[in-house]
Image (cartoon, rainbow, N blue to C red; front, side):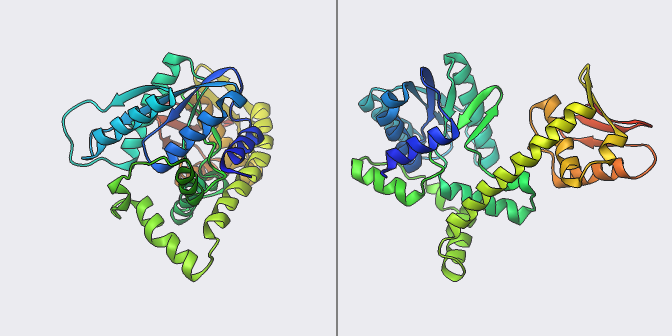
Length: 325
């Protein structure tokens, strides 16, 4: 099975892209994003979709303008329309990974809404998945975090899909070599000041050499298994949420006796569902937050807990209430 067939099979298996729609493709100019652009371009007639490329220039690196022009050149060669975004403001000396990612996502969401796109395709591979799992393990994570990078995720009403999660970086490079298509190299990818780069350049090679040559596959398989297990438990948690939860006027109340009867795994997911129902986001609900909420529910007396997104959880005589402070 060749590279494009594997992408097509993965898209079908996870129902990532529906026909008769517009799909945005995030293109940085790097190897992964160029392989994604070429692969989807070759498959677009079979998939029945229109492609539109999006590139965000953070205007931080010396090569930023070079990368932007490179992407524009190849989009023109492939006859794919392109929208470019640029960071506004004065020149900066540093930019964190999280800030850069947030800027890109905000831009992608804005363009997707404007063009009425069905989804945004991003070029994460099995290597990215393995790196993320390892980072989550080191920080401490349950099933929710071990899922790492999902094939499909909705952010601000836009569906983000990752069709390359079944291929690795070597597959990408071989595909581009076969197609005789170059790619840009980001010099910051070799700077170990960033945690992900240290994991990619130092820790994973060490684990592969000393412990398991197939460590990337082992970690990415762990993410897949964790995702399947999480969904099974989450389906039960959602049923319990509907049964014992009361939602009204931007406030959620959960019956305390109902919460106390739950298995710890279900209880933790119920907390996440409470936050998600108000904010549409659970990413900032850490293990520490969940632990404090568990103690609040299980032990006697009243009390309250401050949570992310300016939320507050309060325990009353009969309910655990969640609301904006």
